Image 1 (tube, rainbow, N blue to C red):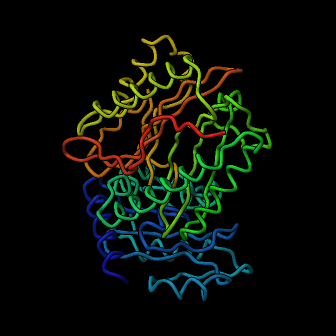
Image 2 (cartoon, rainbow, N blue to C red):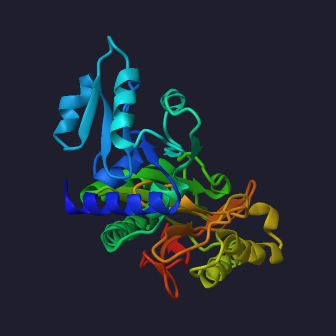
Length: 366
């Protein structure tokens, strides 16, 4: 077990003690990936990592045990298809707990059948989700994670330049996206997603990049991301094919002002909803409130979307080390959309932007 894994397990147990959690139960996915730098193949067979006050164990299908053993020395309680998982689960629970579990922290991404069978084996136990345990730890990024996120942000900066160079009259949204994908691959990153929306398509925040042909005067929302060394990028910038209209410039300036207002509001100790409100107030005052149709941002780490979520209802108190997007937008149906997105890490004095690319509209030569 690596020093990093041991350190994270120790930090997790400290959180468990502080919140009176007797057991943490995690399914294959991002939580285990963060904790162990690996997670088993997820299928319909029960596979659960159980973490108690002093020890941990896997409930592991025999079918997958040998492959998983190559990645971890954690104790296994194996079960075969012919027998079912109940006995292995009971034995694992006895091994990692004192026999009484008053409170279990349950992976919110766990399959319903896994979760229900686990809770049935813990009669009387209260359950919570991982916001008190693994989730809280994941929200606060260490320097190693910061370096990986920064590296990916700079790769995405280059991909945005490629998108701006590719946007020409006569090419399609998909052509621009393909150029971006090729760039990510050239940098050793895996393309994660692309949203390239020209004019009216840009008014859909989650537009599916299409074969829509780009024309003179179009403005493009370019929202892209890639993954390298297990961590992602996520950035949105605007490209105009030729000079944009005055209406566009007004909307762009409003969204930029909203970004700046959110940056100013984002401090340790501030609620996430107050940062959302700061950006939303700028857009509402400019007369576009009804056209800002989504939350201000989302966390970024092992997953593209993870806590903290920066929304009008979120009472998460922001803290140093949290990484999240600030991405206000205005979407005018039938016309165009404008979204500007930064990924920031929160420092003691406010947010540090990971990207080094300007948020100004790029005017592409047609």
